[in-house]
Image (cartoon, rainbow, N blue to C red):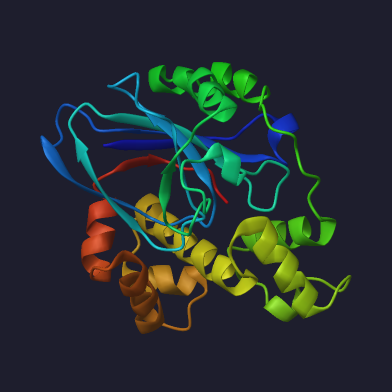
Length: 255
């Protein structure tokens, strides 16, 4: 298996966090349950195979997903920047309730056609071509609240290691929390927890650290603290989760 991320062009940084591609290769098992770590963001993606299958949206994810996959599968998509200008309205998804945390939803309407057009180059590793097409986003952008976007960026860049009370001096903590939830779908505390856990997973797969080393570098109080967070998010033991993630070849953005 291979998972790779590419940074978007500079002019997309306020809207897109990453373009990504996941491949199940010929040497992998015929079918198995793939574990996807949470990232606290909304992702839009397509897969190879059935050209009539609708594009999908998922997130904001705060727990790991367990997804059945098969040899030869390619899934490619983009991760929207939390709190950014691009969001998915309820008129673009089949579920009238809109996107729910950790729920995957088929996309309909103009956004569905755009997804196929913009993301299809990623299935053939065409990251540059996809980035150019992504600029044609068909929905009207919503200007993000400056204090929310700043809070998101601080939590993202520090991997959740900023006290919530220090995130903004422009508005009250209560107002920030309300605006943050409206913009990202998660509370600041939950978003910080997810980004720190994601960073811990990145340390484990890139540096090959054990849980003790990962917990220290990711800012957890101790190894049991990290283990509890992983068990809660992944619904499996931390050791099993880390060993599985270690079987995937990663090319990750640092952030």
